[in-house]
Length: 297
Image 1 (cartoon, helix red, strand yellow):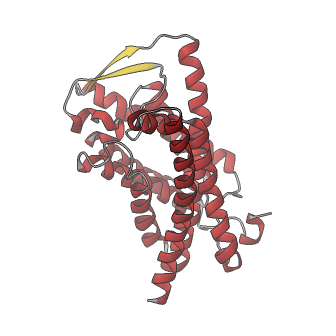
Image 2 (cartoon, rainbow, N blue to C red):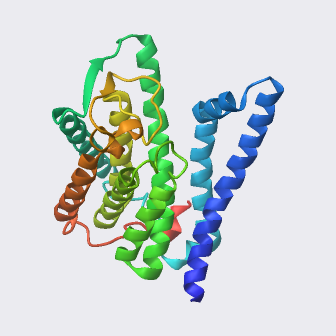
């Protein structure tokens, strides 16, 4: 019982640290906006699109993970998995897998009549947001993987084993998106978020590090938003190569939540998880390839 409370408390504290910082930032931003005459709706929209706030959240998630690890876990012999042998190769594998999975989902949704595509104007107004999006999603992928698969999954695996770590960290990963627009519009978005967590958690387990999940996380988000023109977990990309027009029911097209709102994506993520397990299960028998002592050097 003491162990359960300790683990739950550490996970809660790691998240509370992030929320406190972001709440302070949001309050400061709101006060500044109100002083300049912005309406509450305009404030909410501006805050959600502010790049500085987004990058700060990225940094705070990473800082929280390392702070909790340094204070409580450093001497226990488990690590985040960043210092992984052949990390670049695994990142490339994950990136290719992300492109294949998101492309298959997008094409199937289109083929079944869920969406239609229109080409976006190929000019500087499209190119610059696409470049900004690539940098932002790279940072998001690194921070969310360090937090969800590095710290939370690592902590849970140390105490309860791989199966519990995969299941619980995937549910918590989905719950991190609870404030995203439309996430509770139907059960499908949350099912997709859980399965996205599962495929990345399984990859963390069978590849022995974070780089495969980081690669998949990056291209999964980037291609669905900035290439195929879907909303990304309910958020609207600033620019994209294609523009998506919904034509079918939300359970097929994904609706306002994007590809992760489609039942086809759930099916593909389940199949993808099985494929990842089958491909990598015998290639890496060790969960932590790097030593805990070298993590913070």
